[in-house]
Image 1: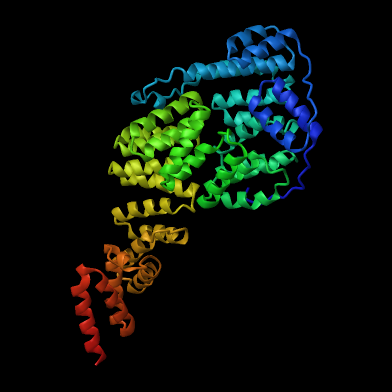
Image 2 (image 1 turned 135 degrees about the vertical axis):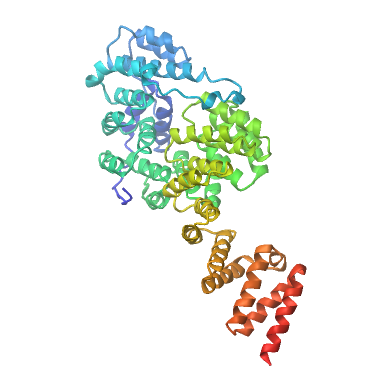
Amino acid sequence: MEKEIRMNEEKLNQEELIAAFSDLSTRCLSQSATWVLEFLITSGFTQKINLSQKSPQFLQAQAQFRIGEFKKAVNTLKDCQDQESLGLRFLSRLIDLQREIEQTIPDSSNLLGILSSTNNRSNDPYESLAQEAEPFVESFDPINLYIYAAILVRCNRHKDALPFLLKSLNAFPLNRSAWRLLITILIRFDDSVIAPSLGSLPKHWTSLLFRIELFAELQQTEAALRLIPSINLPRTASIVALEAAVRYHHRDFERAQTLFEELRRMDPYRLETLELYSNLLFVKEDVAGLSELAQSLTKIDKFRPETLTVSGNYFAINGRHEEAISHFAMALRFDSSFGFAYTLIGHEFVELENISAAIAAYTKAYEANPRDFRALYGLGRAFEMSKMPYQAILYYRNAVTMNPSDTRMWMALGECYEELMERENAIKCYQRAVCNVDSDGIAIYKLAKLYKEEGDEDRAAFCFENYTEKYVEDEEAAKKDEAKEAILFLAQYFRGKNNLDKAEMYAQRLMFDPSAVAEGNALMKDIRSERK
């Protein structure tokens, strides 16, 4: 699955884009239609687009759909059997069911209503909708196959939905919503399902964009980054947003921030993917930047899930955890597909030390996206706080399997093993952490300590020396307890190895810390006497 598949990308075909926009707009798939129109505009198209004429019943249902009267639209089309009418009828039923379910979520997040779930399929209203659509499946056109696949996904029948969705995309590859649905399906499976699906994609430029987005979601960001230069398309806001998301998942925050800022300049009113930008600003502890972003998005659309997520992150960084939870819960209320908001809710419950609620939230996040390593990490952290290290290890191990390049996961797993006195396993974890990005030196310091405790002084010295060279750069850093321990060990180690020059150098460095002056002087005295 990780093999790069290079394609000779097609040039933008204006006729194909026009036909796709006409179909998607007529069928009320507005997000996909807008996405197609973005590429059509950048291709230089300036002529008027004449949408095909439809029956009065269809036009009436179309108008009802667009103002949110979904039940009316279903009733208007109840006797219509053409493809457009069937599709709009089932789409209206699907969205109406979704709205009914979302409106049952309590307003108060303190009731934990967002964390309740029903797994009884026999009572699932989506199942009855799937049964209603099933007799028409053989005659469905590509757009209706996508709608049917979306219904099956709502029934948690992801594998059943896959062949219908692939058939739809091969016949109609410009349906952006269908590609997003395919990602939702594939992140739940391993390579035995993903690889054949990738082999069944249409030979179309949209397949390349999909691969990049999928690899980023699967935390295979190196593969995604290698494919980005293959994009041979106008630099639209969608393309910039895609690269920004990949850089974000790759934890290349500086480059990601540059791209997000470029995206905002290109389209100041675009909200999609800016929730990721707010996560980035939160990690960077950029309170001012997060405040500006939250205010800006609130002026555009206060109740969009992206805005609510950004505002939630703003409240979270300011320690207003209940308000953060309320905003994340509201984002889910307006769009239940915003599953990663459960992870953010879990983080806030951890801050409030409500561990049972945190576990419930992280569990919902994992159910929404089994590839969400942050949810697994959160579960591990919650069980660790509950003094249940064996359960914590289970989740941390799953987290590092999902994202082996994240130092934080290896550190957390190593600390659990260390607590259980499983030093060999802890050493392996800290070694992996060091091989990734040990930005603050904690991993190599902990590794050195374990080697020291195991009596492996040579390896301990190697790690402590690396630690002091990279992370103890000035007098202030040398005053930290970790630095003092490392420098004292190295002074004694090199003295024992009769390398008196190095021993004296480290003994002198102890003088930077007033609490270590006495030990430093004693060592210097011993070293000088040994030189005589």
